[in-house]
Image (cartoon, rainbow, N blue to C red; front, side, top):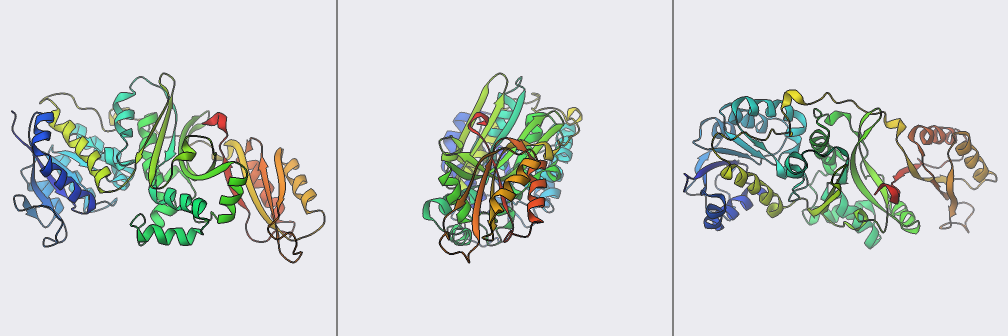
Length: 440
């Protein structure tokens, strides 16, 4: 049997501790399946004395993860610290410059520096593996990077943040407010104390930018994503969607268009009977549409210690099984020099149906006025109705729900601006895109 594969782990949080436990508990099985043992040679974390429930006595301890990456006698550097900057960036860069393979779960790092780090990996003959960075235990990176070679991909989309999916699921099933469901998610450990990165859509955007590069062969463009979070989704929106036969999900979508690559993250109404609508709680789902395979949908746990550690271990096992001198698969499926410049599509040309919720004062002619503004912007309405929650109280604002046929983003935004100028709106309008059954 070949010499043991020595790994160094930087970051011993939930994922890191889970990885150590799995490697130790399944040491013999891993040695058999990989053809060589996997040995934890060194670790780095903030608190050396913290009880993590695993035995670290045989591993060398480094106070500084960059020192671990630069000096430790290891074959693979496993980065589980998170964050787009230091120490994660410097540590990963140091390991790659030594020709040490890197496995990371850090989507923020890849979104910010992925192309640069991939270039260093290619120059030094090292692997940069990151299955755990997107959708946790779902093997979407390997599918795009290796399994779908030869396919021309037209669209990648999915539910990529368990925190948001849990909150939207609970709002619908329990009839609770966004704020209440967020607090429950925090209590259960599904949301951070500062949840902004998740609920504002940034986490999904980072993951989407990585998938976009793999799917379309472009440089990562995390700053060129149309972004909306879920903080403005109300229980009223959830209930109205249900009445119309839809559920609201935070989706990340990347697709080819005639004007370039469109990347967008936003709440979306999806038909209740569609597969994606049935993905609840902290579960993730990623779909890939291509010309040869058709549509591939993968569903599974998107976060958590075991799910993420499983994906990390899969990347480590791939390295353990690789033959010395074998040509490595490039980090983004093709050499960095072959990645195309990212060309952003015009978001204002996005075509699809829309849900529009307006609160208006009770005034004669409001319905007709709204319909006129829609018609002037060439927007065809599938339905327009008044929600009857306060119908019997003339002093209360009335809620009007509009559902459009396929139309353009620019037309909807222009119509909303015109309606705002009429003086009968109360608060801000709510606009949510609808994805029709034909699209899914």
